[in-house]
Length: 241
Ligand code: ADE
Image (cartoon, rainbow, N blue to C red):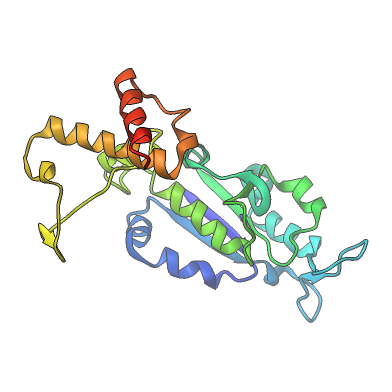
């Protein structure tokens, strides 16, 4: 899969592609990427990419011509093209899975007050927000999307890990422990040392329910939960957690 990212500061993204699991995916050829600097397509001698908003108001707007020329240069019209903006559709695991089935995604990163609306109307398939807060740029937001998508590609992460993690079951993930058995007086839950696989699975499911109830109760309404598990949630509620 290829990620083509259009940005005024592509160097923000370079380190991510050069590091850790992503660097391995690039080396194996599972991921290809191209970082394109929008400023290279600005045509005046100062390479201007922003201007004051029509109608007045604070901040600057990214000019349409350099952005459109950059989008043309990467063939965005025929590719899935997304724009990172706090006014987009809220990103989640389902959108990450949808994007992971594409051969290539073009990601436009905004700066300042955002990009001239005419470019968005002409080229963008989907506007995506990573959360209800405003970042200083779309670059960091694009990294969140790229990270959530590429790790779903075949061979990047072991598939067992993907099945068990938060959101794949509709619940948050259970807690994890590793050596040493006692750390600063705190012991690993006994059941995890028992070697009894079925009991460990049951304990983990209970912990997932407990954690979801505590941190993200709204997810419980959509998750697939048995009658018995509804009782467990009731007990958690009674215990006042
Ligand atoms: N750019 C600035 N804030 C953003 C957000 N929350 N999501 C996506 N892009 C953004």
